[in-house]
Length: 263
Image 1 (cartoon, rainbow, N blue to C red):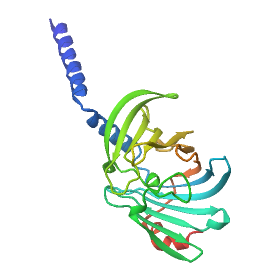
Image 2 (tube, one colour; image 1 turned 60 degrees about the vertical axis):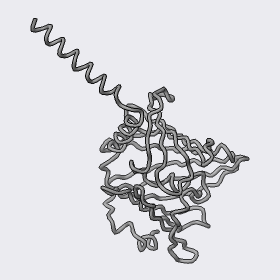
Image 3 (cartoon, rainbow, N blue to C red; image 1 turned 180 degrees about the vertical axis):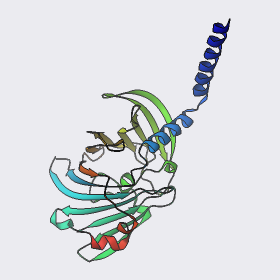
């Protein structure tokens, strides 16, 4: 009888867990997955990386830009990012500083070496292209949880991964998108693919991420971002390398004066 009692209690516990999961709405499950993904990528504090940006027009003609990125993780707010352009010659020395936030407008400044001035980027320009690429300014700011409403649409295979398919609805002002559909792998909660829908709710762009590597601290980073614009036929590839999480960067490296000192 004791064995039967234990089995019965075990069955009840399993049933309760199943009912609890089943009771979740798609919105609750979507938010839960988004929070889990955010927590998996928290705690790195600061990092640097080098990036090659390849712009491709409809005819396939390419132009290349080389950029150094610095990031500072901010607890309780969005991250701070500083991007410095090295090539080509006409943009060398150009630098962009971004303070990401939740529902508040992001703060962004651009340093233009030709006039040796720092210009503030309007918060209404989120949907504008970043340095002529297929990435918008909002695509490259940190993706704070509160920026979106979430909904789990389905679960399915995505290449070599098993993925959650999540709908994200922007909650911040001046977004260029009505929604984003994101494929997140179940094992490590990494973005594998993101679809972006324009203000007419038509598919605008698709971002595919590949070449993931795990760095000390169990932080995963993709070596390649491929953004394809379905409406223009243009595309942009970002090739990442030289990730460093032991940089010693601090707040002093992320202000408007720092933009002018970069080399």
